[in-house]
Image (tube, rainbow, N blue to C red; front, side, top):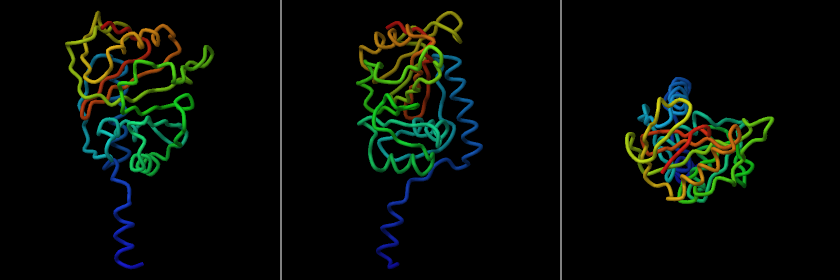
Length: 205
């Protein structure tokens, strides 16, 4: 193979993943569980990660933590690029599906579309766990302001401001929460901060 071919092959290699895949994934998984169990809390990203654009660091970190060979994944139009696809296949091995209804996990970059959650799998009455988990890339998160959250894991009420979601999101979330124990769970991934909304939580705008 000549120098030009070597250079082309090298430049096409996927971007690096987690520095210590086992240790980092365990740490990130504990944080993801903490975000789900304590809705409204905001968690900084504890690892260095530079996934291919437009995938942001916390969304990429969650992907490498939660996705595997058995988790069908859907990428929305905001994230469905060859570089992101190759990176996820290389580091997570996850199958990519064509529609959100087929996905166990959905990665959403164009969050303006999240005023409608009905396109994702909600599970069924006997197996509500067969629903989708949505990882949404948002511009920013601020605890103590914005929406009022109530439900399991929250002592009284919590406040969370999310920069980037559409104004119709609280109504869409109310429809989702009314489906409990069915419905989707949502991770809100700012570039370097994370929060989560489990389906059991109520959001008031």
